[in-house]
Length: 149
Image (cartoon, rainbow, N blue to C red; front, side, top):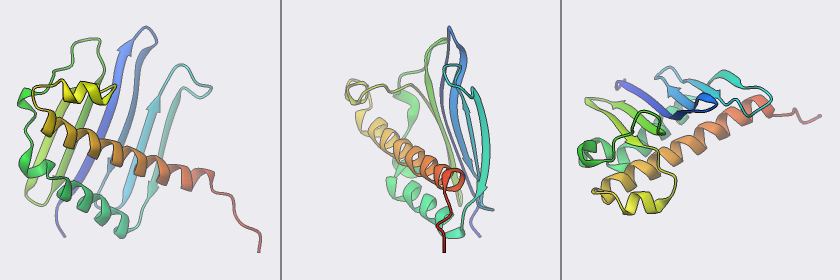
């Protein structure tokens, strides 16, 4: 089995404190989700589910096909400042390992204005896909209502 690990984090520190969203996926299929937002009824949410090997393989495929492991370098990306939002993505697939950090992307214009729009575009698209897939899996597990037989 190839070594595998994926972690995505987006967050900021502001007047409401440290607010963030984080996902971690392990080779066992354990998907951990953490969300802290002071502006909600339940400010701190931590959940975990186990997904099938097919889902783990799909995430590995998404990461590999994005070319982020081989064609992207975050050296020229905008660095987050102390009280600014930040994105972090760490992926390990086989022998390839990356750990990227960028200032929070609020609009595609932020990507286009950067000094590395091609690399940052790959990063942004992949993190959006990972975020949507992870939220969908968490929501399916915790909000699913059984269908009466």
